[in-house]
Length: 321
Length: 249
Image (spheres, each protein chain N blue to C red):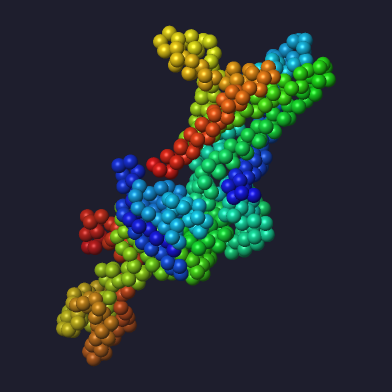
């Protein structure tokens, strides 16, 4: 549905987006990650046709956004970053206005507005002026506008920004539900959000895609992904180390803690062996009669991956220490 | 209804209700009418002139009244959209920039027409007091309406340049002031000293005054209509260029 090909955007001498390509199919939810100023919003603005790309192409269901803007825009629902609304209108008036621009007529407008007002919990404020709304309500009003015409493609720039935890949860549920039948791309700073609802994730930095995969693929790129963690009691640290080192599957072993409680992290020689390593460690601990109360395989954390990928090299090396 | 007309109508409706949703419209209309009355009866010498005509006491003031009031009415049209960020919303809707420009322009022009129409008591007065030339009054109103449209189109362009309404207002007043003064003798005399006569004539040709004066006298000339139409079309076209550059850079 969304096809982005080698997208480049230059603002004067500065290259904000540098050759971004990806595809989002129907039924996929793409999480768009990256530090501030990485080019996320600029990319989304090009996808939705607000700004033209310097070069490259965006196709929405086959329609090129530069050549067939009207046809392409009809298929898109868009929530801009600041969630702007016309402040001199009521929520109802604003939603009806956008519905009309989306080409809805008569009774279709009534039912569409009633529907999104229900979905986004706006019934109570429908006849209130946008001016008087709190930030969360204004945000949801703009979000409501983006899903009003039941678009096939949804582009959401930080849809949960500025919402309270309950509202965040609610918006995520809506996105997840709609993701089954639509192609959705949304940007966020909250990494749990990506794990919670995305089928795919892209990390973008300095205008280029630096990582692209499913959330679990990305997580496995963390430095400690696949390592096995073991916590034992009342065993000398050195004993633990030599025993663990003797395992054929284990690579590096690091230890933490006092002699009373020792936490060992065992890295596999090869990442594909991490499942077997965990079993081997368990067998060893039982054979040795160690008292352990914790044994698990580290999946890797998206935060760590995000940091290692997007931090400049100098900072990266110090943060590891 | 055609789709593009429908989009223009949707935007026009929104802008127009926007005016009346805030006190802006009412303040504007009241001030416009008060100033009109003041100029006509106190400064224009409506009663003293001894003839039943609106040309001098009433329409004479319009280029100057509009100079400040039209930019005030139109300065927010794009500047506010840019400041709040709704421009992004509007231009990612399945509409063309032209439809948005024309919709906004017509909305504000309709509003100005409404304010102008509310000056009808002065027409009633002049008919009550004497036997004026009705057609001259109609052509005066047409001229005034077109003049407002020309100023408004300039304001629309300056409004797209900036997100600051004050800057948009000042720029537009300056440009409209130029449109008034361009043909005025002290200005042309200033140019004559160093510029080629053709350039002087070109600059003088931008002046709205002689064209408006014809309408005031009761003459509806095709060339005057063409003048106002071309100012409006040119300014609206400039607006679309400004908006496109804004998104490009």
